Length: 133
Image (cartoon, rainbow, N blue to C red; front, side):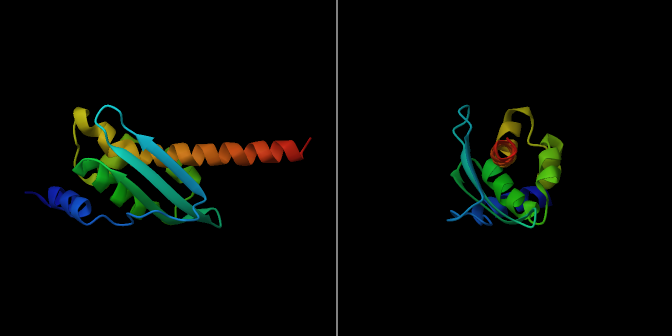
């Protein structure tokens, strides 16, 4: 077994930040109906950056490890940087290409994070545009 596979197994068996955040600024659940993986991301922002990131969910080793690794990676990043992350970013984070069949598993946590950020930004923009009227 190579180092990357060991790292994925370690994150799967001992996930980091796997718990429900009570007062999250951003909370987003994304299911993957194709394989049954289900991840909910919780983010707390401070000074325009991610101060805390947690997740809850069930799924395969790839999706759970990716969520664990992503929650560590998000700390200190701005929404702008996170929204630029992509499939390649997740493959680099995992250290191994999971292949075409499993890439949706590897990117599910990122999808939840980005969709949560977009929803939050849209709410903020709507509030600001109503104040300006």
